[in-house]
Image 1 (cartoon, helix red, strand yellow):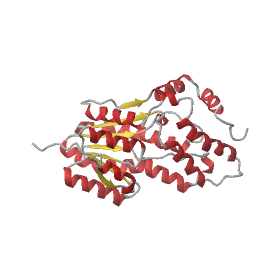
Image 2 (cartoon, rainbow, N blue to C red; image 1 turned 120 degrees about the vertical axis):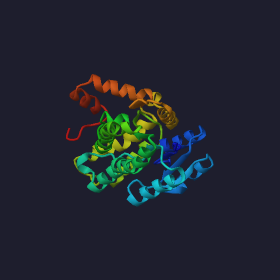
Image 3 (cartoon, rainbow, N blue to C red; image 1 turned 90 degrees about the vertical axis):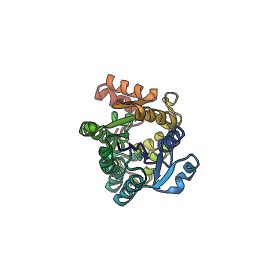
Image 4 (cartoon, helix red, strand yellow; image 1 turned 90 degrees about the horizontal axis):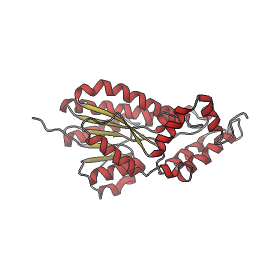
Length: 284
């Protein structure tokens, strides 16, 4: 009988959830291949016992090379954790198409293509886990985050379709939906807004407010005490991996549950009114 590879490939390990998950799983005996665009950004993970690979999820050549390298050593990738992603904020009219395409290339298309590349190996061995890192933002939408939320809504839909398609081959598809996670995510989301050309336009005040509130939300907002660190996500990911029949979705942190409950209790108009309390609405 052919042995089953349970080697783990994780994208986006230079910081945050990816880095924490790589360390956590390696510390619990998993064979982890941590990846990022730049090896130097995760050099310390070698000391934790991780294998490091360069991987750019916007490059076909890079993705093929990474998958081939792991399959050469392990036979197959047993667990794929699609974590790479970032937030593109800004009023929809003001974000250049180049930045929009880059957002989808990283958050959606890279996830899809890497999944396509690992599935043949998983099918051959009759076992695999695909863990897609979504967000509570895949279920709700905050002002100024339209494109980021659109990518996470896409991840939710793709995961639902994929779960049905590959379940018969012994492959599980799991969606992880973190709420407020204290990382540098907020600062990154604010920084990408610097490329928006609307300094004196109709959305200037709105974009400035979003840029200021985004990092504050992750550092000192009212939900901060109901959030958690990236290690909380790492623990839930391992729980999903070791489960014989994992849940299709895992919410992480009380803030995720609170936000979803609040959204379900509100009509669209009520939600819009609540969001207006975060800052002035464009045009008002």
